[in-house]
Length: 142
Image (cartoon, rainbow, N blue to C red; front, top):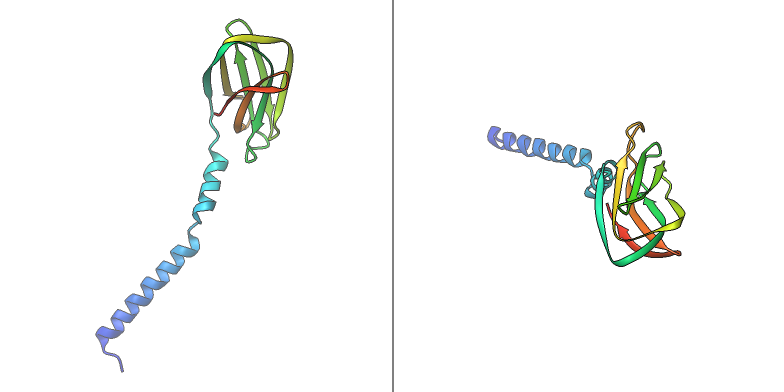
């Protein structure tokens, strides 16, 4: 037969073990928690100034959308050289590109990713790449 004190200690130990098991069962793994944060953490607005070594022609904008981007999301990507602006509207979770002629030729560009406020959510952009004749010139990572 166990003494009352020993029985009390066993009951406390058993309760602590049950609490630990319940906590472990309900806790999310670190990878899952990171994936959940990544799915909801779209950068709402980014403005970057891109300095090039000299006047460089840009004739294409490629926007890579994150795989976890909401299907109903949308953003506008603006590329401005000081005199003209090119705009690419991203809708959904698909990466897109915009080719144009004549090219923008400048040594300084402003690239901005801005939400579309009439859309249900913002699309998640991984990368904006500025290209010339199919070759990458510079990439902006929001």
